[in-house]
Length: 486
Image 1 (tube, rainbow, N blue to C red):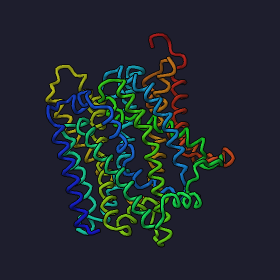
Image 2: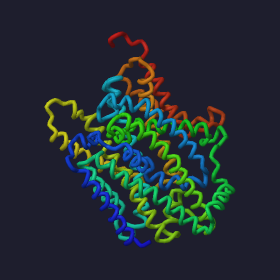
Image 3: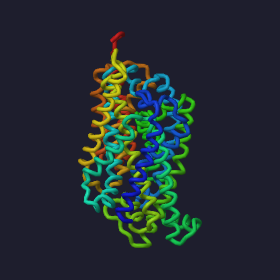
Image 4: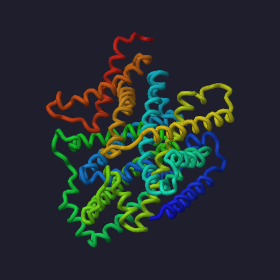
């Protein structure tokens, strides 16, 4: 694949994004930006959320994981399903009852202003880190295989992407993203399916023989029974459940799309349908990973640094033009999906939760819009700086790193919501930020010393649950001896 062909492909895809954006910009206002006028068809949202959930990390990391972790990732996905039921029947009714654009408004009603700001802060921190990681992975591949050949520096590549994303999300916000997500989902799933067929053909095997070969290689192993293994299936299942609750149900980016549905019933159908579809989609990614590793072994292809490089190296350098183009379109889709919804959600959270624009009396729609524009641009610049400062990734697959970091940044949100929903106790609101800072610190210290303290036990993604529990216990302490009216 020549850099010129890839550049033309990039321009064609970008033109499609802007074409969709143009059609969504009719009669837009601030309500369109925040909630899409609450008129998004649930099935469109459900389909588009697949691409938003998968992003570039899943697109490249999950196939690469198969070599070392086999199909154990699917236990995490099965745990997701329980999480989606919690979102559909516990969190969504709460959010629709509030009828507010920001889901963190609940924290103010339940605890107070300090808790409200704390929840919003942890979302902003989580999304800035997570989306920057996702976009770095994708843009880094584009840089290596396309823009380096043209002498374009990394900073300019990242800046170009952020400007393009700004241009098509600037006015329409969530109303635009609901529809652009459908295009991105289509290209990402199509890339996996087409590449799978190409690799199977290159291996000279039919699907029946290939399934047997994959099983013989041990790739299909799903349940790890060693309690001390970070991938122990019980830990994986419950980690998947809580990862979904926090990274979807307590995440403004993902919930903002659900809140754009016409009513609560549609939002529930959206979440449950989206969750069910993720099972075959993730199996497809794992199956692709297995056939890619088999192809690499047969043809003696070596992955340079990390397993994340498996898919791009084979698609762009070994499998021919069709596979290269297919992968490239999927990759561009992943790049856009990693940042567009995030910018909108970050802008929503900052303008509504921190600046309190909707609370101020006499503020005009024009002033809200102009402030929103400035904040939107500011977050785009911040994401760009984080990507450039991230540097080279290590030998750990990025999806593992992403879930680990999420365990520390989303844990306080998990504790805040569960304490609020399942107890009626009041807390000393001004001390909540202290608890929210101490909980991740204690969780990290426990994780680093767990093998010595717990007879070889090593924490995996379930550190999220521990972090939430520390927050819950901290809030319980803050609720003791509160006098009536305090």
